[in-house]
Image 1 (cartoon, rainbow, N blue to C red):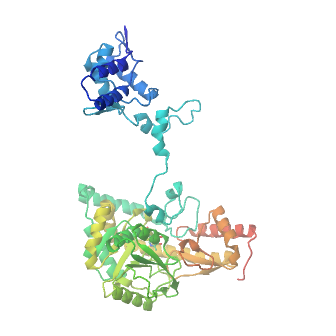
Image 2: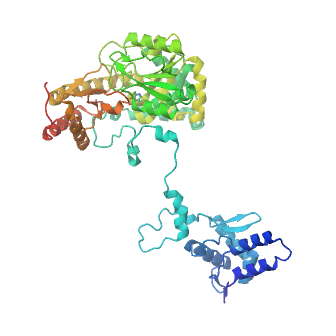
Image 3: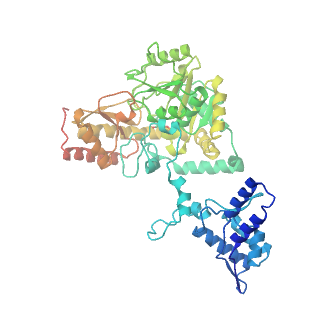
Length: 550
Ligand SMILES: Cc1ncc(COP(=O)(O)O)c(C=O)c1O
């Protein structure tokens, strides 16, 4: 026989009114309000003859009622288990079983000394993303609409997010910082990742795991793998003219993190950092993220111009790329290096030496790094594996003055503790077993060949429209337009055909150089370079873009 619940609501109100005798007026009003918000589950029909247990039937019917959202909006409190049991003529245990299940699934929540309430939002509203989407005739219950509103509202973000100069949105972030998807060529900054010896790396990785076992799966040192720091210190002293020992080294997740950790260790909000203009766009973003006041500094043919007006504040950090200015490719002169170190020494500033392309120099004598000639302890030297090995490895290193290293480690340990222990151990082996040096040597040869082909083909195919500036090192080149007015048309052609050098203006803050494009050549085979340059030359011809003088 079905049991009908017809008047839980009424019973509770009556009970409330009866209990009012002897209460203060305020108390009784409060109680009345609470009683009125109790949900009346008039629809419940329990069938004692059904195979489904009574507590399951009760659970299912209350859940369906809550999901339908058809009960009055103001009602959110459930009748007490005692009242419901008595209404339905069932035991309190049965009601409690149903309530517990609804509670466990997130439909109800119990509040101590207050009772049991309908959860807000209901699980359907936060678990099922779009139950009602595309269902044009289905009415979205008011309760569901209400629960959705906060999700659809634009998130209020920090000033920091707005301050970071980055025009990308949505899926543009999926392509990474270079925005180079499949079918795109001659983008600056991409190394030849297909030449990376994955088989050797995998073998060394297995060996490292076999030797160190689960030790590599635990949290690791915030300074970095000891073997790796030792190997890097030796490499830098032998091949980059650095003067350092392993305890001055911090392993980081690439150059950006090297900058961020350094900035966070040295800067208070609003303190100035000088950057090169044009310069590495990510440096500007990172220093802004760290709260710095970023001051763009012009360049001349010796490197960053360090002259300042008497009113101008002294920078805490000067970010420079001395061995290969990015993106112009200027090598900082010895005189400018000395002047920069003296400036830092005199004003208690630090020079952040970003030595990202150090290994790829194709002309001129090898130059020692700035850190190696610094006798004042003012240089924070940083290198990255992004160009030598591959960028998604996210490994790099900082060589800090002794007085600073522990502060950097402290920041890193707070930020994300450390880089992958397995990758660090693998890299340590890659270096100590000689693969690192032989890989650099091999890549230098490959890049020298690609560079020569790029220069030859570019001058032949596009020399009437551009003047190619040939740097001594690096994996990109600047091509200046001969007819400046053609810049917008050329820009749109490059985007359309997917041969995508970056406009030089992309790297500028205040600088307004003549129109030019920065081409990358390293990540493409000689045949691909030729094909891309031919495609560009042909497309410019078809677009009737004028020639300049050769
Ligand atoms: C000047 C400069 N430094 C460093 C990097 C590499 O940064 P990361 O090590 O964070 O990949 C680049 C990449 O293009 C760069 O242009």
